[in-house]
Image (cartoon, rainbow, N blue to C red; front, side):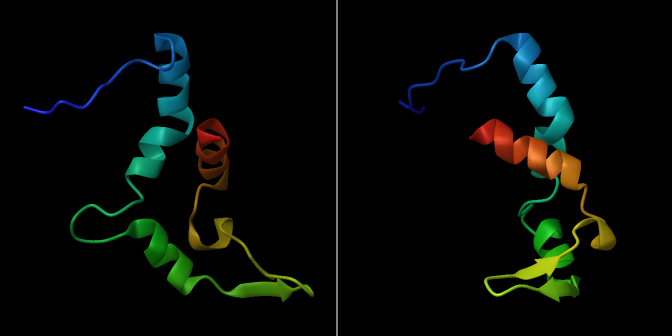
Length: 77
């Protein structure tokens, strides 16, 4: 039995929106005990161009749903 305190952060409508637009997709992309699909995609990504400060890649080119990734990331913050 865990003694961890838990509670709801979002209303059910917001939780459903968060799940449907990013969380469900993202949870299928992280470590699942055998592989890490998002990392697999990033390892085959080819650099599109360089700037003075960064390398630029296209997530959509390797199959990443960048809309769902962005929605999830922004929702977390």
